[in-house]
Length: 639
Image 1 (cartoon, rainbow, N blue to C red):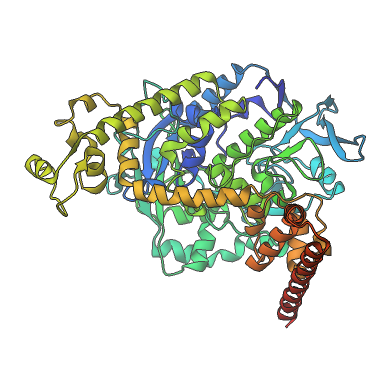
Image 2 (cartoon, rainbow, N blue to C red; image 1 turned 120 degrees about the horizontal axis):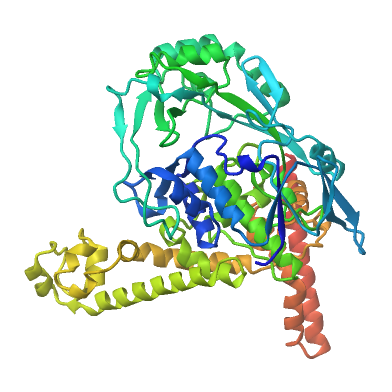
């Protein structure tokens, strides 16, 4: 986008380090990675360059919930990421920390970012800052009864920024996450463990994967045992849980520790995936064994798990707690409401995971660059992208626990699939200046081919007797003629079954075949959802003035006034997604905001003094009815 950018990080050598799981993608997360890729981001490209194992999670279900996931070689991922960044134009990298922000009043008295102050006391002037603190802001790691200030094992925490954020009244909270111990793969007995092979025809994380893939490895599956549960239960008092409870730091809901699993489900054992961390290392990541129990207890637990009886632990698991800011303090561009030109992304906004952080980072970066040119902001809504769902949830609903993306969070997931992210977003990102012309040409070529194949299939139209003679499927009814498109969509056949009768389909690429099969088989659902999206967009287009004094609106309950005043939603649609805002209040709010416009239009129709008087009387009656509704709501709330 042409913006000169400085990346400040503690150590250049740790750029691309995967602090926890050596994987990219998964359920919901794979959607985010593909959307980032579609907009010109590099996460998916680096992931495919570094992948050593692929699986599509939920592959047995419909394509709306497929979760493409790649297991990374840690060293390859780090090296490939650093190489790509070194090749990026207009990007410089400085090794340091940001300890303070330079914030001044602009001509209108609004707080505005003017630069940063680094740990080596250098003042750097800049009109835009994107803050991505990860788990380093006020970070503390815990292993049993031991604690130390750190953002992750071996890296210092950052504390100076906390004071500045508090000074400007950003509401700070604390969250936590955890990571499992690392194992020496040479000491694991794999012979009786279940194998998990890589998918032979992987669904890549980038729409432009490398032509030469890496060697693919095998993962294995084991489980905790009843003996594991006994040891965990006997040592619960030695976990840092008491510290977290005292500080009010909530446990992660979706990446819970062994201690929490045992407390909640004492009768169960738990699955463990043994995932090699690379092609040239013996270290294995035991996915599912996140724990912060004392080191000696962790080893004792490991030895009760089949295959790990003689295992050596190369590093203990730990928990890390850190500070975050209530994300309702942000606009949908991820610019802060309190300080102009300052953007937040990643764990600082209460999310968890590499993919959620990268999704926010690309949106914050695009908007920071666009704002320098006074361009229109780049905002994705819930009907356009999973990234839109992520940001909409954060800025309108906030979060009290680490937010993780799932496909279930989207109302429009049949349309927002991982497979069509490029067709949904590349053109928009190109218009915003983020996606290259090369990316756009690739998508346009793809769409042209899909259109061509679709027309061929829809043009092959024959009666039921013809299809019966072909014997491809058993007709459910006789009557109207059927196209090849209809046959693929309604009957249990696949694209390749049609090639003998339509030889022009012979050399169709796998990605085009995937799109054709999905869109024909889900055509009815997609059509229905398209109508739902149209209704959603109608509400999203009804803007709410940002200067509304919600405390003065008597038709709102006290709770609604507080939540709307705090959230300041930009549209009626955004207001509807704030918990506690009732449909009645939304309708009243719609009438209130559109009132002047509607009255102006009505006044044009009234000519005589009598007609105008009648109109004013009806308006007063409407206002009185609104007051009655408000009074009833107030009584119900108080009771």
